[in-house]
Image (tube, rainbow, N blue to C red; front, side, top):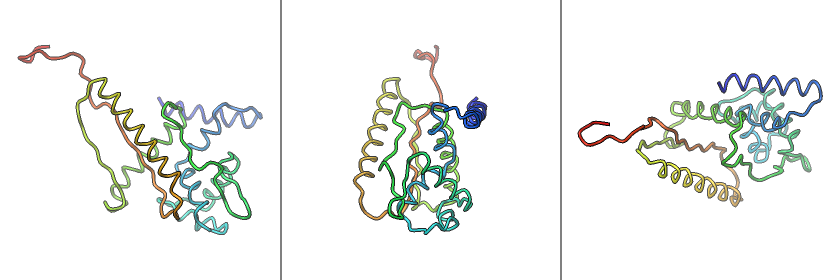
Length: 195
């Protein structure tokens, strides 16, 4: 199962670090291991928190501890995702994306955490602060492929908007699209209900 794989991969990363062995993909795993690292990367570059880790930690929803915030920022710096320039944090890359083909254990774990937080947001935020919607429809294999392509194209356009957005940031959000099977139809029914 994914949970067992995650447990064993985390153990491998720890063993590799102890033996000074580089585990391929360990940087990716470390970034996606905790849900709050991605929003921290956005916050530290937009908010002057003056190394007040508690203040930074309390900006997240749900809040994390000051220690988690401090360690998280240190990890982001270690991974080369942020740097301190003239006393301010800056992102080394404007946008991060795993792309559409990456299906790593780390990204699956991150997405699982975000889906759980999305479910919690139904109770945590009023409707005007969230957008969770869904449609259930029947599609052919080709239709499903086309819908996936359309979702990927929309995500690319949204990333482009984020890159061009030079205005002062007012929020850090997580956008997730979900598309997954609810049922599979093996054979086509003939008229009259026979298969």
